[in-house]
Length: 89
Image 1 (cartoon, helix red, strand yellow):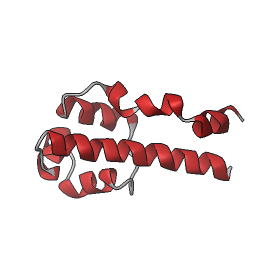
Image 2: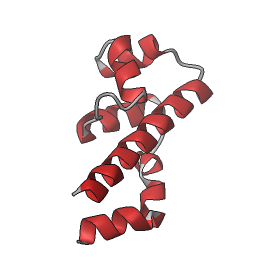
Image 3: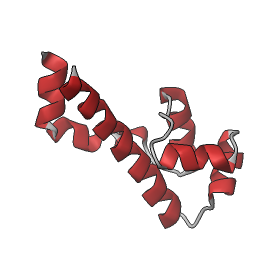
């Protein structure tokens, strides 16, 4: 189970990093992103640091607010052999 937990954390962290990086590229503040998706700037901080997991529905809103396809947030998981191994076990 420990490997699975590590894998999930890696996925959460990767998505969090992608939200942070894309928000910066779009020159958007945490407050602006939060306003667009209906949460506080503090919640965006928690999403971007992976303190709080981002739900699938919330990630769709984030993708729309940042003008990016949802697949952008998941592309590297296809190549993560540790994650594939953990999920198939």
